[in-house]
Image (cartoon, rainbow, N blue to C red):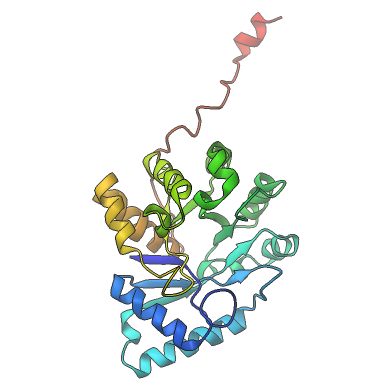
Length: 266
């Protein structure tokens, strides 16, 4: 399994606080069967996002794992948990590799827990024009989308990818998040499962239980696609290739009138 969303780098945000925390999270992930971790600190007004510092913290983690003989058990990448602030958006349009996963163009985008930023559809388009492929993180946990999930249809039609949190699949974030995650999985609206891990207790780096639940409900092929194949392609900057047709994405579109229909209306 490959985890594309993980707050592993210590002392940078609300994830790991110390190097020991980072090491414990890594070991828990390895034990769970995770082979790749993308370290994704928040990029917002509250937490400073600095790629040089991120690299330094990751090197600390790697060095300690190598010292203890564990370095070959996990592969690391770098990205961020991108917040839709004006400064971030403008900078990402000029420096897309700075924020994307391993600099390859795939960008994790986080919404607030409540509400949808004004002009979000246009912002997604601007990021795509800049060469980025936005991946919307944990929309099932957004209260506005829980009430009106159809708001995602236009984004998915436009090429947005969707990441659901492993914990949501098994009910860790409440019944509403679990219900929306289940609906999205059933309708093929999901492209990636990830942990969004912050610690080893309340937000642990575990995917196995969710992967098994998805396999039981939707089949082994779906579980492998969402937890291994798609994340691996994203990790290495490759196109996802053909995906199952999302259900209901185009049902709200009005059919276009033909020239003959327009002629009859004259």
